Image (cartoon, rainbow, N blue to C red; front, side, top):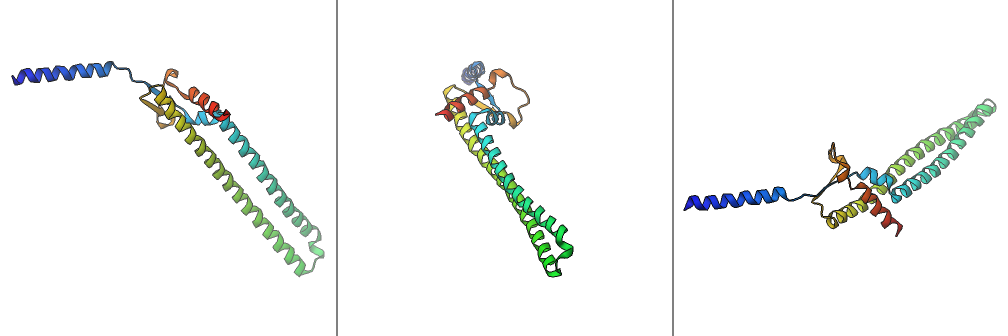
Length: 172
């Protein structure tokens, strides 16, 4: 009797395992880096970053121009200045140099932070869209390509679909 029950349970387990193995598992791979760079919103973010970078460079050029003017004045008129006036000009020149370096560091930090914020915001939106695509199309798993995926067939690449959906959402 125990053997019959064990045989029936074993047969049931084997049938379930075969059914599970025969079931199709829909898997996808997404390249978020590519999606970020190819979406309309990603292009708009790059454009905004470039514009801000140009603004900061213009500010730095003004400060650098002031520095160069002070330096030129000091070199040109330094020998005719009183020691006190020369010292004051040298202090102004040093201060302008420090101001330039500080503003340059601040500008670099601002650009890094702005870029990180924009990317984080866009990746958040793309992640939500990816979840919706996964649910709507019956994916059991969608893996991010940078998570160590070494090879995948173009058949499982959902990046183009993600880009399309992101562009549609951005246009609205």
